[in-house]
Amino acid sequence: MCLMCFTVSTSDVAIIEKWGRYSRTANAGCNFLCCPMEQMVGKLSFRVQQLDVRVETKTHDNVFLTAVVSVQYQVLREKVYEAFYALTNPREQITAHIYDVMRSELPTLELDAVFEAKEDLALAVKNALSETMTTYGYQILQALITDLDPDQRVKNAMNEINSSKRLKFAVAERSEGEKILTVKKAEAEAEAKYLSGVGVAKQRKAIVDGFKESIVDFSEGVNGTNSKDVMDLLLLTQYFDTLRDVGGAPNCKTTFVPSSRTTADDTRNALLQAEAAK
Image (cartoon, rainbow, N blue to C red; front, side, top):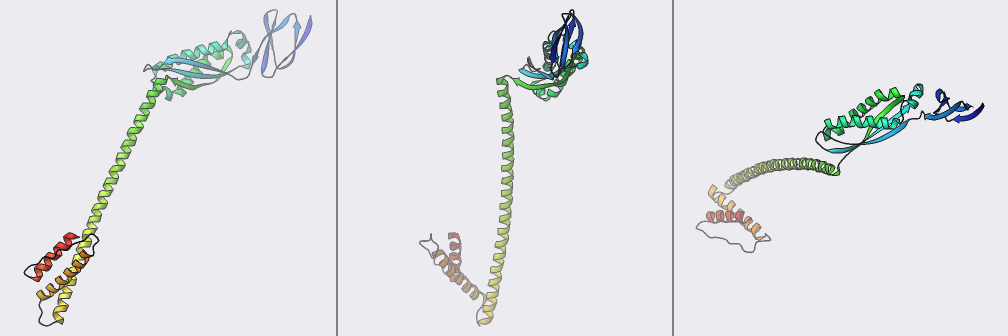
């Protein structure tokens, strides 16, 4: 019988058998074996390990997709014996449970609901694995749904639907904006016409008041005149002013001056034609 020296790395544990039967575990550091009675049959790591599993299944609305599930696990220190001897391949055991959970949960959900239920699916996977793998000496730390990938044609169709919805919303918003602009424009035009009408009314009132004052002043200053003479003079003055303005316009080439029996008629018609020419 002789002693053989060996070392175990930090975060690892070695399994020692004596005459083919489990004897003890060797922790990190320098250890010894009594040969040929004892032998080291394997090692386990206490480090956190990750397993990525791709699961292809279909949803409730018959859309096939591929889900990627990442499971983080580690060996329980108090259950090293179960972790080493209970399972031949723990990664295959975990993969089988992931397939079972995902292929039982996803067919109950429609495609849109699958993306919203990622947390619930991950929790279901973790609970199912924890319940089983703890018995075999493994602790499930976390289960994550890292990817949900439907068929490319399905993704294109979803993008088209989303694009159509956004376009419809944009058209509705643009129409609403045009409606507001049209209403505001109509309100502005109505307000402008109202103010223009008020201005014209004040202008005409001022003209009438001016005529009235001119008639009174002229009648009082010149003896032997009446109101008709004053009106004829004022109309004649305005008539000549109008002719001057019309003749000085850039687009005026010819001015027609009609004749009539009286000066008042002459002036009145000239004023009307001048206003129309403007």
